[in-house]
Image (cartoon, rainbow, N blue to C red):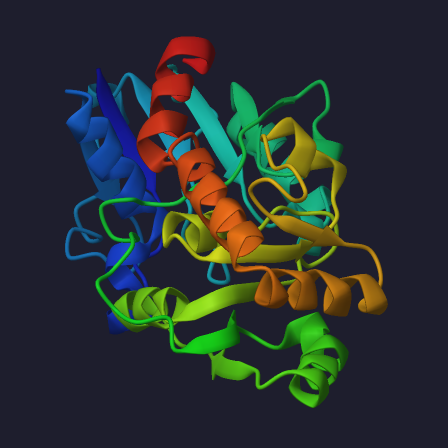
Length: 277
């Protein structure tokens, strides 16, 4: 089949190759599908696509600030709107675009927001880019990401542990940073299961993250392949337990890495081809 992926090119050179459109394109090509990427900032942006050439179009653009995403309402192929950030923005802008473009379905990354117009399509990680590296785990506890809603918890962890903070570290340096932690602290924004959950276990680093019922649906089990917390005290206890019990730390680390193999872009793309398209 011929696929077209629509998404703005990455604005940060260090992270551009990690963009969803490129990860999905690599997976589709690995599964012997033809796939083009088009959108604002790409070298082919001025060459407007001939939509009639495609069997499937996936619109991955979640933040069209300039109104460049085309109206696909008259395009007759299967069309999917990938909703990655509805947990932040709410459903309204996605529903509006869904109706405007006469899409087939919304690929909804947040389980709790799935409705009659959507199917659950959880986040994943790109194991062609994110993997265990031959680096020492020199930090007991680390955090790699943006502060956002995590300021209080980061302060708590800095007080109680020698927390290594890698704020807005992206691309290959993000992978190297996560690989250098024994334990990686995560806190999702709202009700999502963020990319960092999968990226952490894909780096073969122990994940400590806040509880969300969707984790269970994805195979995450507290004490087996991750540690989950609901309160600050549970967060501290989970980290202490891992650092004080090396056998448990290795169990959770290795268990997480085994689980990660079920949550790669290639696995998601296989699901997309077999169950959705």
